[in-house]
Length: 93
Image (cartoon, rainbow, N blue to C red; front, side, top):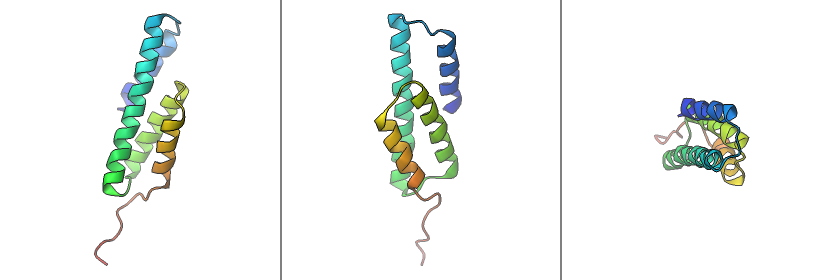
């Protein structure tokens, strides 16, 4: 997922035109990044913890999202993920 977002960011950098099509593409990419963050977040909430690999992926997605002008929704999600445990609690005790 992160490779796709980075590829799209690189593509956008090459075409920083302010055309309606460019603006629409920029908007769709930003919303796609937010959707990816939400997916990681939902999985973490369902498990009750976030694996380190998922957290690292979420951070990369968030960095791209923020670069594209994303705001509070993604920031809230990444902050919540950063405060979660990175391993399941020991339920056998």
